[in-house]
Amino acid sequence: NVAKVCIGTGVLALPYGFRAGGYLFSPLAMCGIGLWNAYGVDRLVRCLGLLGGSTHGPAPSGCSTFGRVTYAATGRHGYAAVDFLTLAFLMGGAVAWIVAATDLLGGTRFSTGGTGVGNAAVVFVVVAPVLALKDMARLAGVSACGIFAICVSFGMILWEGIETYGPPDISELGWRDAFPRSFGDVSVFYGVAAFAFGFIPVTYVLRESMERPALFERAAGIGLTCTGILYVVVGVLCWIVYAPAVGGIEGNILDMLPTGRTGTAVRLAMAAVLAASVPLMIVPAGELVQIRLAGDGPDGRDHPTAPHTQTFAVRLLLLAGCVACGSSVPDFALVLGLTGCMCVGVISFVLPALFHMILLGRSMGRDDIEGKPTAIDLTETHMLWTDRAMLALGTVATFVSTFHTISAIRHGSR
Image (cartoon, rainbow, N blue to C red; front, side, top):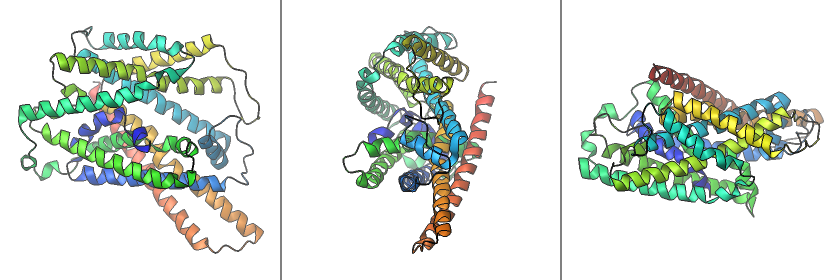
């Protein structure tokens, strides 16, 4: 289940990210990103045992476990900031999927032509009726179909590459291809890798679904390891196969699909899967917006359920915004990378260290005040210094990568 949660549309940009990172740096860095996720899981699980004695009062009614930890660590303003960050993550994912679906549609004879605005409008028309559903459980089969379609697509892409350029030959690559050539390349890889894992936001949901939650960290470690190995194989293999291609590999690996009938069928199938997946981001984003508009706060009261017409209107407005953004920044890899740098990077690599550092420091302070002897003070102090180092690293990585990715988007839109 951990591997299935990680493996999604982010894998479509992996070969492009590996090309930016280089064939030596990228596998090592991907392992590092996986270990970083494992560290985040460990810290979030530890936070559950440090929630007692919060100085911020009870958390808002109906909030998730991640929300309770956020509120206990940072209070009302931090809780609102993380809600905004989560909204940006959901919207960014929706934009990336819309851009990918638009690109795929543009490579078929069903394209409206032009600059892609027409294709984006087609995606809007297809997705809008789905947002009217009251029960999104009807879309449960979309993820399974999406993974199957991605596997078929990668198989066709590799076969086409080997048929065109011959078997993979790493001897054609030099040392200049082994490492990133600029901070911009590092930022591209970081954003793509962060989004491709994207496991931290659902840590508590998966843990609470287990019959024996005590085994969660072990399961997470195994799942993250398997995912990391798969990502390294896919990223390196696709990149090396298409290294001789003019212009190299595209930001969206599906752009390398052949143009025959089979290729067109796969493009349309993937476009449909991506379009049907957009509501999985828009619906929770709409719920966040409605909660904020209703003024939900730490008062312990439940707000009345909004009329479905209002819910549908909010979803349509969010979809229209995503389509407009996708039309103005028509680059799947950059949109996905920006979402990974700015949103997933903060949620996965900044917040776990920050929350644990605050809650553990507060717990140690209470023990000192109450005069309780602590035989593990040294271990806790070591953990605090580790959290500070990881917090600093995550903050710098997020800031630098976001800056360079935004610069790349601005440069590409000129």
